[in-house]
Amino acid sequence: MADVVLSGRVRTLNAEDLAVGYTNTASSKRAASVPDAPLIDNEDPQIQRLIDLLQRYSGVILSGPPGTSKSYLAAATGKALTQGDSDHLAFAQFHASYQYEDFMEGYRPSVDGKGFVRKAGVFLALCSAAAQDLGNKYVMVIDELSRGDAGRIFGESLTYIERSKRGLPFTLPSGERVTIPPNVHIIATMNPLDRGVDEVDAAFERRFAKVTLLPDADLLNQRLISNGVDDDLRERIMAWFKRINGQSKSFPAAALGHAYLWDVADQSTAREAWEYQLQYHVDRAFRYEERTRDDLIAAWFAIFAEAESGAE
Image (tube, rainbow, N blue to C red; front, side, top):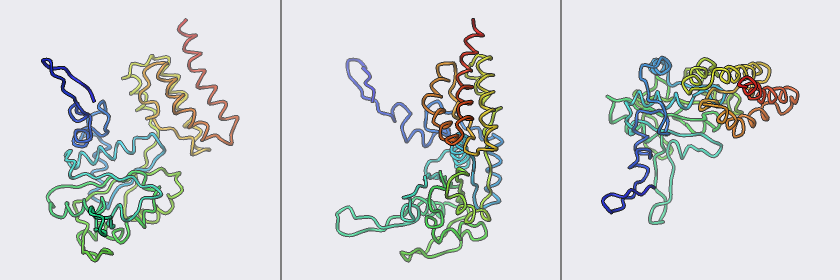
């Protein structure tokens, strides 16, 4: 919180007052919750492509290595479809402990502690609201689809998310009859190297469109230019970025998304990117390839040695 003095009085401002809290960011026209996230451009070709696919498929899966803007693009498309209405947009992140009870329905202890009450999960609640409002679009964004047991989490609804079965009633374990209305759209993200990918492919490949997002050197280059990075430093960073991603053909885990270097503006921020993120990615990707790892590490630090010598 922040304290502001007005005419001798102190007013305490929280995150919502400063327009950076949950309520403001959830309903804003930004794809991420950070205040300086770029505004959503509904005419962006990538967003338009996903919107088009959602009209023809049961959903869309964005697949790619970390840092390739999957979550950003999923959220941006969801906000574009719902015109920024947070009541029409729901988010979930799958993980090993995520269950049917979280997504569809389950029983929770009652407030008075006397038994249990049925509670709709995030997806069922969204579907129920959409069924009462067929003139508007509703979007379910699922992050890390491959890190949960998708078949168990969706349960019987897995059949009814298909376009041809939308609106058909089915019965939940509680006995309630529900439908998945046609105005509900599903956008999911996943890393193709996750252990659960095969199960996801088997469950969704016939129903969903899959879009691969790869590290984008052109996009990163333009970002570094807009960040004001010195030309010489930018060219050396870009050469290293292309070098490590060139290794991904032999070592898929080496693929490095452009978002890792998104905030680089000078040597100091580039060094920070290495210290807090990049070095761990390199160590993990080349754990059993010491020579390649050491070459990449040396090449990274050569960026700064050469840039400094060039400045003399």
